[in-house]
Image (tube, rainbow, N blue to C red):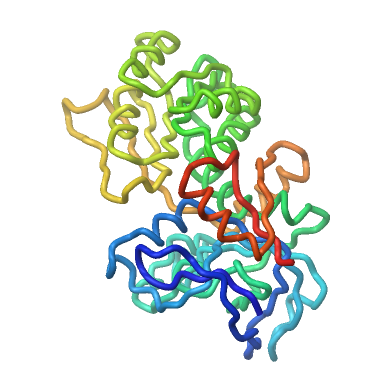
Length: 347
């Protein structure tokens, strides 16, 4: 079968022929109907040698949907022919966090070398994907595979990030979204539906700012040396109640900390360069500011996100590529020229 694989650190991915996997006991084989390309992929591809102890070559793709093609012995909870979405952050399934459905925060994953598909284990950028346990599958129902695949990360991640701040985002408050790209434009839609807050989008691109207003932002502010002052014109002394940084580089984190008000939240969602950090201390930010760096989301939250998509609340802007053209999707991703998310569909 064809697969887009990570071959070596610092090198572009390659389209290769690999063996079609066979499900063992307790496993499920999916025929992939759509796979999403994400900035996390680009981060991993360009990380220094040794930064990630992933076995190479490795098939990319941590966003995947498909139809169950085969089940291994002992699998009774799912059946062949069912359309499903893949819950990506796999865990041990038995620790306290996994028991709560929060496999994204599994206490044993590192020790047991359990990794998500496409981020340590062969992923969905292929014709077939081997899933280690049916509990990682969520029914897709009548949702369009191409339109919904990115919800498994680009929908789930902002949803999980925003939920923690919902009690604060009441009438008269302000939520700032830094970065109106693949995750940010979904975050704006979720904030518009779930809260009564005024939403301010911040981005370096005028096109992305126009896009942000299309999907629900009330205000749009260009990212430059005047951004904090411009945002403060809207928030006044109160400052922003919540700032969601979907970029995660030092300048955007510093910007977020300068915008937030007393008792506000700063949530760092974007991975940036992986080393940026918020400066926190008694005199470093307004009183009782909470700073979070969440990771992905829970399985139950993925079910909630898919239900929101069925209700028409959230829609991911996508550009479609065939598997043979998937390398172009990664080139566009690296160049920052995508509008929304890239989705690769096997030919």
